[in-house]
Image (cartoon, rainbow, N blue to C red; front, side, top):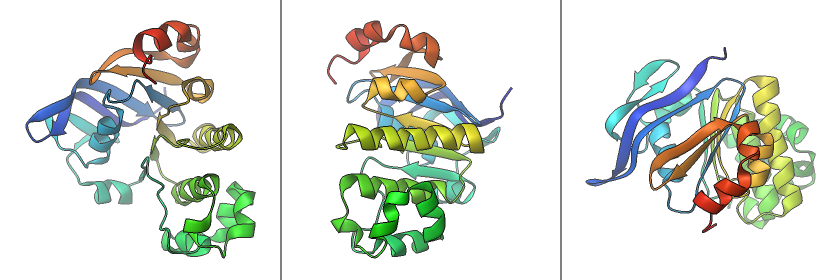
Amino acid sequence: MSETLIECRGLSAGYGQLAVIHDLDLQVNAGEVVALIGRNGAGKTSTLLSLAGELKPMTGEVRWMGQPTTAPMHVRCRAGLGYLTEERSVIMNLTTADNLRLADVTPEKACELFPALKPVLKRTAGLLSGGEQQMLALARALCREPKVLLADELSLGLAPLIVTRLLATLREAAHERGVGILLVEQHVRQALAIADRVYVMDRGTITLSGPAAEMRGRLDEIEATYLSSL
């Protein structure tokens, strides 16, 4: 059985006195892609923020490499956590190459992962296309060889062909390099095509979970019941 890299047990968290996620049990193992799906406002981003250390638990706990942790996000990142937010995780006024250097990633390594970055290494990141920006963000994250990557709406606003390329790269990172990936994704069918396991979230709780193969067989039901507002 694969090692559990990050998990939460009985986790409730939120903002001020208001809990927006309730009693969550969720885990991500080495070498797997886990999809977290649900309609807008279900609590998916808050779940990622809690796992990353940006939201403190009200009840329950987050565990990193089998041990309970209350460490802040920057400490978890130094220990091997990567986090891609739904905003593009690049510095817009720096060139592509400088964005990579700032993350201690060589342009050669990034271009090996995404050859499309090679012609735009000297271009300011703010002038890149949305797809190029997201390739840059993902290259920065994966080339640092994280143990776990949390990815929030990686495909937001991107063309289907780019989405396919990004998701394929995530799958390769998990299955070939052992990265544990938790993916929040609006393109549910594409996410389930690369996922190993799936959690369905509704109103701050996990309402359904299981192997992706099983969930693909229930996709029409899941879309009608839990994703109708997407």
